[in-house]
Length: 88
Figure 1 (cartoon, rainbow, N blue to C red):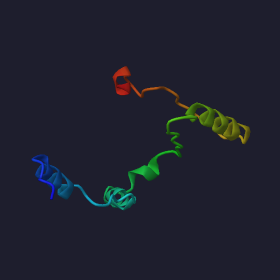
Figure 2: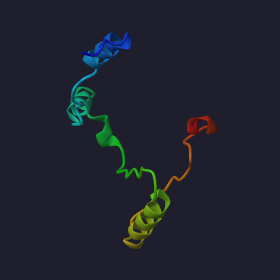
Figure 3: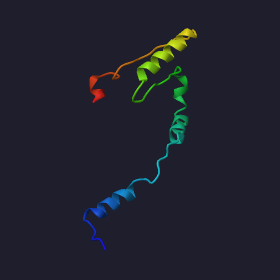
Figure 4: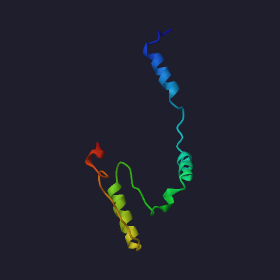
């Protein structure tokens, strides 16, 4: 039989505190927005492009397509929103 390591109790406690499953649905956000009176509905349509690779080319192709369809497009491309420190 293997002797228990001193850290086993600590790890067991940490694992008991961590949820077994993660709720990836939008239910909580939808309930919050409903309680706030759906302020997001007053915003103009937005497409947010995020990810590791291909954001610049994806944004450029989308912009070209929307503009060729006669839509007004604004694209904001920056490694940070307001301050350089956001990148850290």
